[in-house]
Amino acid sequence: MDKTHLIDITARRATESAGGRELTPGDVGRVLETLFGTVEHPGTIAEALKTDETVSLGSFGSFQSEDGRAAFRPGKALAEYLQGQVG
Image 1 (tube, rainbow, N blue to C red):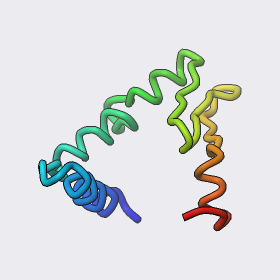
Image 2: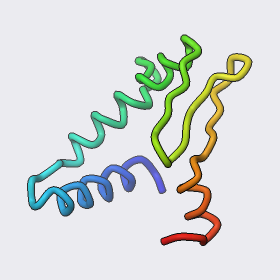
Image 3: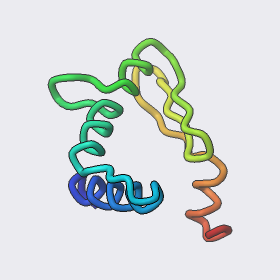
Image 4: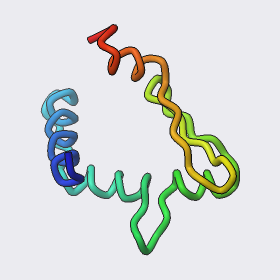
């Protein structure tokens, strides 16, 4: 799934779950760019990792800095879903 597809699906699902209040693909794109960054501007996750903070995203998982490298640790719910134990 590329970034455009991710943005479109997320915008559609967010709009459906918000009782019809529209969240546009442009809105979702700005949020993703703010979180993950662009070539020109680091995102909030990268900025936190650079200062040795861990970024925890609940049951999805967490990002950590290990020896100057970004590492992702899946959360329990994500791991169980991928293993077919739930959902």
